[in-house]
Length: 43
Ligand SMILES: [Zn+2]
Image 1: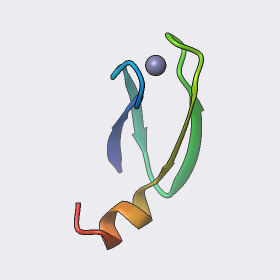
Image 2: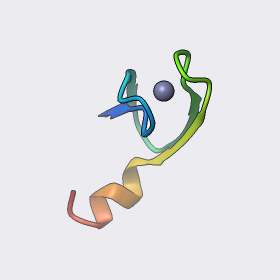
Image 3: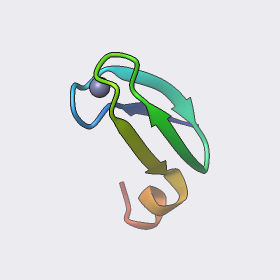
Image 4: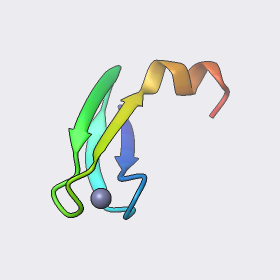
């Protein structure tokens, strides 16, 4: 599981594993995440 934050306003959106799309409740923008891809990049 990885903690993810909104790319636009930095609000913490929760913890995800794998791929997820989360609409930020504060700024209403869509954030896409892929934790598997992040791990592959060494983050
Ligand atoms: Zn936001």
